Length: 191
Ligand code: ADP
Ligand code: 5GP
Image 1 (tube, rainbow, N blue to C red):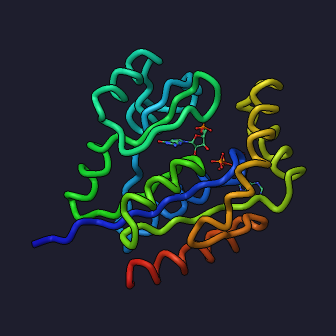
Image 2 (cartoon, rainbow, N blue to C red):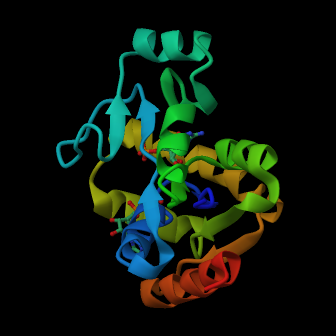
């Protein structure tokens, strides 16, 4: 019988480069990775696609799924902006024998690790500094001044959780960070 896939969680302050790194990893066919699409109540950005980047829900729809116990984990990452991993999403990918890759916040990452233990590798992506994080967020041009401030304020707290993760990678030069992450994943998957 085909073995259930493993789980690889990426967490980091917003703007650290998780999405960029995960996109690179998805190109690596030997890793057999599939991205866990989270549900969220935040607004869709113009470049995002429903069902590919997120399942976009209203706050009411999100809360209904919470009540129905449909989430493996969920967090109110920012005020009134809910994000969560649907149990059905994890099982859909694992049942195909594929490994699941997550881009979720620090608290969510720790919850998934607690649920799946040794079947789960948690990777924390660290920006070189808060100043560089701010620069990257501004450059990405997805945030208002207000949401940027919210994300930076949260970043300081999130950085203090880095030591709860199996491994910490500093995303200074992108190519180096991607190489280091690939090495860790290859060991975890036994490739
Ligand atoms: P996250 O998913 O953690 O919020 P992103 O992957 O969206 O972060 O990256 C934030 C911004 O920083 C993007 O504009 C991205 O192109 C840029 N970026 C990512 N990694 C690096 C790097 N090593 N050096 C400079 N810019 C980077
Ligand atoms: P963004 O709005 O930039 O897409 O994501 C904001 C934050 O929410 C990021 O830290 C991201 O990792 C986190 N996030 C995305 N999906 C989930 C999820 O399913 N669960 C949790 N706990 N956090 C998530």
